[in-house]
Image (cartoon, rainbow, N blue to C red):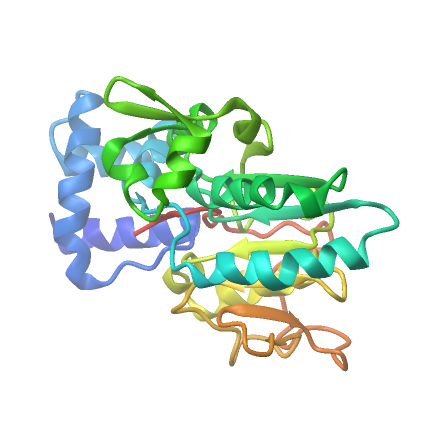
Length: 299
C-alpha cells in the first residue's frame, strides 16, 4: 500500500469513526480490508480506496469501517464494574427512585451484548429486592452485524466460558447443539439500537447509569472531550458513569469526579456547573460534524 493511500485511510477512518490509526497499523489495515475488496470484486486495496473516495459509496464505506473494528466483549468483563453495580449503584437507585420506581441504563459499548445481558442477569438475581421496579436497558453499537448477534443472544461454548459463572449458564441459557442461547426473559430486558457516538444522542433521553467502557481509549483528546461533555448532559446529578479500566476523565473534564472506592465509576462533581473544555464541536443542533463509534467496536 502506498503511503498516500494509507494516509487517506487514516483520515477516512478518523473522520468516520473517531479511531486513530498509527503508522504501525498498516499490516492490520491490509489484513482486514483485503477481504472487503474481494467481496466487492475489487482488485486490491488501491481499487478499494479509490471506490470509497467516490460519492455514492456509503454502503462500501460502512463495510470498511466495520471491517476495521474489533468487537471484544465477554460476560462480567473486569468483574469490578458489575460488583459496583450490584452492591452500590443498584441499591442507590432502588432507594433514590422509589417514588417513580424506574431507572434507565445505557450500555454504549454493547458490542455482541455480553455487557447489557450481564446487568440483566444481575437484576434477575436481585429480583427479591427489585420487585416491580422497572429497569430499561439500551444497548448501542455502530456495527449492524454485532447488534444482530446481540439480539439473538446466541453464543459459542468459548464465549459463555469467558467470565460467565456456570450457575448462570445453566440458569439463564438453553443449549442448542454446540451453541447456547440466552433465555427469552433476559433478552427481552434489553433494547438494541444502531448508534454512532459522535452523532447526536440527546434523543435517547436521560440515563441513571451509562456504561461507556473501552471505547474512549481509541479516540483523540478532543473527541474524548466532546463525548464526555455530552454524556454529562445525559446524566442526572446522582447518575453514574462507568469507564474502562484504562480510561479516565482526568485532563478531559472537570464535570466528573471518581466515585469513592469504586474503580472506573464516576459521578458529577457537586460544585460543577458545566464540563471543562466545553468548546464542543457540536453545533446548536447538537450534532457533531464527524462520526465515532458507540459500542464495543474498536481497533
